[in-house]
Length: 195
Image: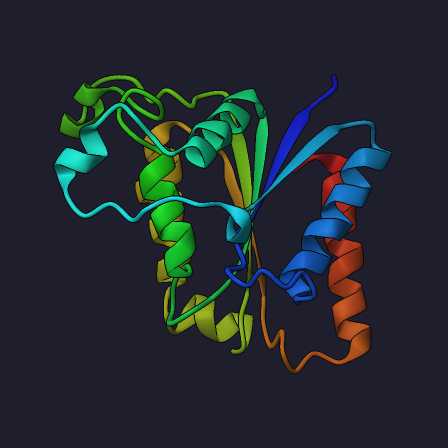
């Protein structure tokens, strides 16, 4: 099967020299070597406004970059979302992107908000890679991985995306070259599996 994978590179900096970019490139390399079709969205390159009311969220019209992103999400079988942990959760740019993109009528039916109704992105899976300055175990056990859990349960699974797997890359800024290389190899292997 030719799996279609969409990488959502959610590092807010337009510079493409961050470890998040290296991890996404490693995943892409593995996926393409396995014969999967891969596309990528760089959120830092997109232009879209922040939503400021529920009325704006309910409106059918979206910015051109958001419409293109929705087309790519609809096309994909699997999503890879890569971002750095900022203040315990996703950067604001990613949150703004998800609010703009995963709207009623695209990601879920209106009835889904009341607990019933369709999750319109069923049939897709996801992996979330989060880099962080703290040890990953500390994030997982002391903080309960609350930023990831919110993304997984309240956003992705709510839209029907499952399973949602994860990698927490701790001490990303302090990792020695050997540790960084091990993560790149591990992520490349995940890309080869398409998971």
